[in-house]
Length: 125
Image (cartoon, rainbow, N blue to C red; front, side, top):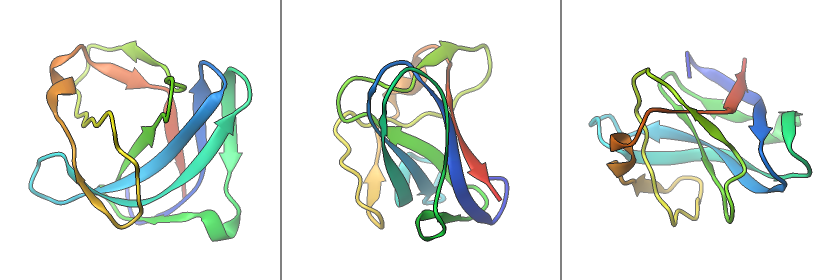
């Protein structure tokens, strides 16, 4: 996140219908993929395409500068990606079952793959 504030919504492109958990993590500060889950939103994507979901006040997620966006596809991937020439900082876990407040040590092996740009953004204020 660019600063302290709240995630008030999500914007993403879904490539297929299905469940997705959109998540906010806080790095533990040691530069590894050890991340604390701050909060998230469980959604069902009804059809492929661009979607914007605004969160009711009680579901908004307080964030701090440096927090990062993540997601979980419980089954088939819903959020697509494209390949980029830019730099990448991805952490990965194929079996993460997210619980807010828990800290996860995620795998960094995905960083050796081509740079990926995912179609997801938190709406921040």
